[in-house]
Length: 118
Image (cartoon, rainbow, N blue to C red; front, top):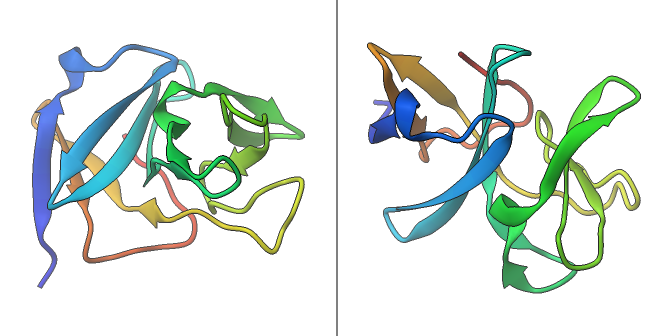
């Protein structure tokens, strides 16, 4: 059975920016893009910089793909798939995320490849 963890209120998120949440011992980076009506949850660990920093990365769009650029070495990770654009053999976790009655919820038990919600 899916275990959805309540993280915060949608009002607690900064538009067009990331925040980090510690959920069951996992650092999860959450990105809120209100204009695109999307919210994403990925692992906060940067496999190149070997640090939990992705929530502080810059978000944007490369060829129609929503991405976060690591604040350390600037690799871009697709927020929908977790795949690194510079090295497709490297991938970060992507978690299901949803907003339910104004509350942001993440499911760590259903690691996925692709998807976003609002």
